[in-house]
Length: 367
Ligand code: NAD
Image 1 (cartoon, rainbow, N blue to C red):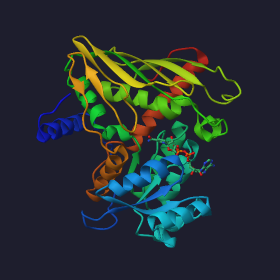
Image 2: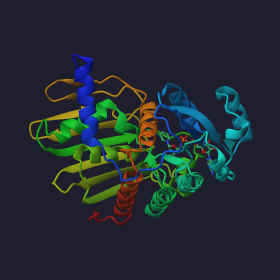
Image 3: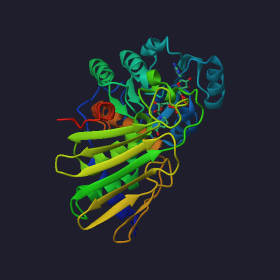
């Protein structure tokens, strides 16, 4: 898709953003007045995502600043303190997060720990009076997702899930094409995301910490795409898993394929894998044409094409900076986020149904 003017681009992406926004009901009190104030973020969990994406992205934001960290490793705390000039009073570990309650420098805790620790760390943050941005998948069970939502509601704090693609212009444009029925009703969607996983000792292969395999980690992007393209929730799912390396994949699936039927009759078939390269894409097929992104879900380089040969290649943005700036603005303006906890819970509920379908061999209804 080509835009001739900046105004045309902004108008179209804003329209697309509005069309796929799934704003939730949460709103919260703002801690301190002043809409031009920068929102202080504390990153909880200083692994790869925090180190290579979130901390650099925070430097590019307009409304956020890296104010603090939560880490279980004193050596990492020293490194981050030196690199980002973080004062000692803004450095916490997982056991003293409640002390943040007295620290007005920190408005938001961005929870970036392994999936099954999201509830523990999000709830601690909410109880300390902080807004919560929680990485995907929200948690490893519906019950734990609900606990996070309840804790944030009780604390009167906002909760958002780290769905960066809700801010990515090419994905937004495809949601617009689908929802405005530019090629007619979308009838079939194919969506895939995967990569060959490395280190066999990492938490992503540990069921207790990850909650599952590639479905929880990257399949969630394919699932999200089917949902934001359709603007509907799947009514039923069926699925199959496989393991070809039983040493590495002792606890979680290596690859999974699933199918979903939407209430309007559209079908999606999707897959996710920790075993193969080349999967980061979706294609949406409608009666009068089709459109696709390949790659669709990466941090950069997202582009695609439509059946009328128009390219889909909107300017790349830092998705994490956009996601954090948006949350900061929601807090500053006391507005609901387009990626609320309820959205995270919906995905976890569907993923649990997909696992149930794979384990039982039966179609599972989500009605
Ligand atoms: P990582 O393994 O690189 O980092 C995890 C961090 O959690 C480490 O700093 C580790 O020390 C800390 N941690 C705390 N308690 C732990 C425990 N008991 N066991 C293991 N680690 C523990 O992982 P990551 O890739 O940074 O992923 C973190 C979260 O971010 C996950 O939920 C993941 O799904 C999500 N993520 C999202 C994206 C995205 O594009 N939005 C990309 C990557 C990861």
